[in-house]
Image (cartoon, rainbow, N blue to C red):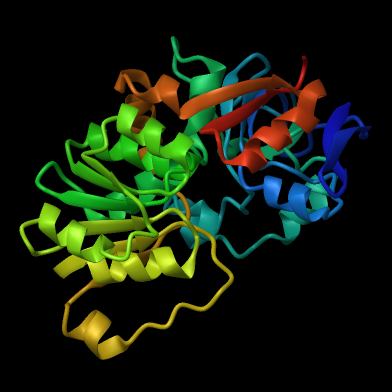
Length: 337
């Protein structure tokens, strides 16, 4: 089979990989849609890798034993892997599972990436796609809508709330879809003109520039001087994280889904105790919420706007260039084209 590889600085292509075989309760899925996420960072930096991608939708083509899936089932491949038996997995919070040894042994480097024609996956992490939902739209149940959906569930975002969304990349635009589906008012912070325009088209109440020296004043002006009820960082930067804390009202809620390797300085007394903030780290959503995510995908008129580019996997170089430009929403690959 073929899969994507980063071959050098700003250079990508396809390489051959071994054919996959099902084992135990793991199934082989033929990938028909593979959304791109933050892999462009490795592309720009020239970090060579052929283990790329963590979200997909496709068709089950091989099983090793009777189970919840059969050949021909249309499925969404959830990100990462888990043991399926620990307390976290049984509760639906598989993304936080710490028992990765079995996954590493079975999957190996050949069966892990989703930017490939096939993937090997535990059956409990290949979820059925409802009738009438396309593979492209179903694939948004991973990182397109997943991080913000889980965060909004944890924060209890409702139609009574105003939410600040920091960053209007694919995750932030997905957050805008989720916020609007819940009836919440959304203020978006973004600097890239293309993404600012897309957020406006998708119904953001206001799109603000993070480089505006008066951005906190502007947020307070838009919220009656109180600040937002909830804030979600999708940018993965210390500046955005800081803004979320500062812009949220007393007794408000803040959640972080953007990956950031730099240290945020939190002043416990003024930032947390005296404001009474609830601060949440969130990675994905509980699997019990998958039907609710699919409801958003089926019913939100904004879903088509979350996918801006579709490329054959044979044109992955071009796809990476678009992803790295930031002038895009979700970019998806078609592995068989």
